[in-house]
Image: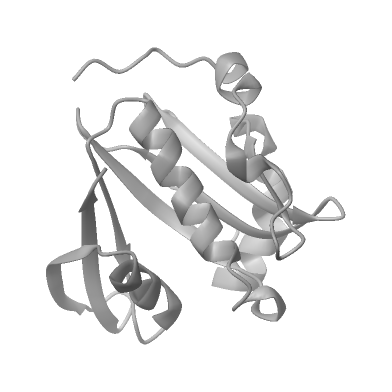
Length: 165
């Protein structure tokens, strides 16, 4: 399927429903690659590392932030993995903001945008002992488990979930 060529301008000008404030009081918005530094303190708190993503030179990189009063409380980063597959690489929500639907809104927004850009499938990995919420969300949203195995690097099971968009 043909995907539109994206520029940062037309991506950020596009109005997505999740850009309005949700019931949780957070605003979700698309960030430019240059704005990744805004998420570094949040990423450090959530994952104990400065690195948010290994590389940013993907053909289509999508960065979403959830903000309350201009303070980031959650994020999600993903990219086009193959011609028709979009991969959500990393994301999280501050502990004090969990259970409010922010992670679900970030996931749904990322799925919506990737579908609009021509991707047919959406997938992500999760580590259920470290981050059980994303497994629950994926199963609730009718994702299929396509891989489960032990990941020695994270000392946890790695579960890959996938869904047709």
